[in-house]
Image (cartoon, rainbow, N blue to C red; front, side, top):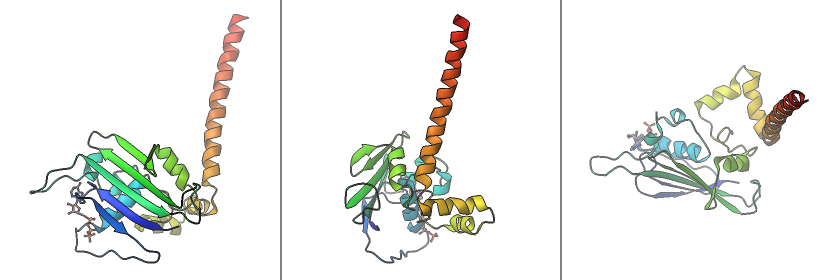
Length: 199
Ligand code: ATP
């Protein structure tokens, strides 16, 4: 699996629609300071489900939408799409190519798509879980990530190994089931109270 294409429109400094195609192997992105290199990696993290605007170097959602220049007006929407090669079927979906899209409007409303079909953020998270490319995966190595891997805290290191071992999906399902069991237990004890009041 590898990143084949990134498309952006209205995201941070990218007012016009841009498309970058990647081959397998190493690609370097070079450019003058402030030309938008880091905005590309911010866009990748955002489409993979990053919810923290602070970690995308902004303070509010609107900061990731093109804010205009002296000669161009601001955009009303930001959209980023990533196309991944899935010929090895690492992503649990039947298609050889998977395009994940995220869109946000100035109103704050968000939309997510997998291969142009509207979906939930949860669907994207589940699709990417245990592949290493989710928002908490290890495919984007920033400074913080290196600290996490080298961290003395075994819990931090463990998260990275759990993602690589492919067990995050099962842990998440277990937590969901435990929450459902807890709420069923609560309902049962409420019913028991009502029954004892009626008796
Ligand atoms: P460096 O080499 O200095 O790290 P860089 O190439 O990584 O720079 P970025 O940090 O990606 O550059 O881009 C910064 C530029 O993006 C700044 O000029 C900033 O004004 C612009 N920018 C960020 N958010 C927006 C936005 N919402 N609208 C318009 N421009 C934006």
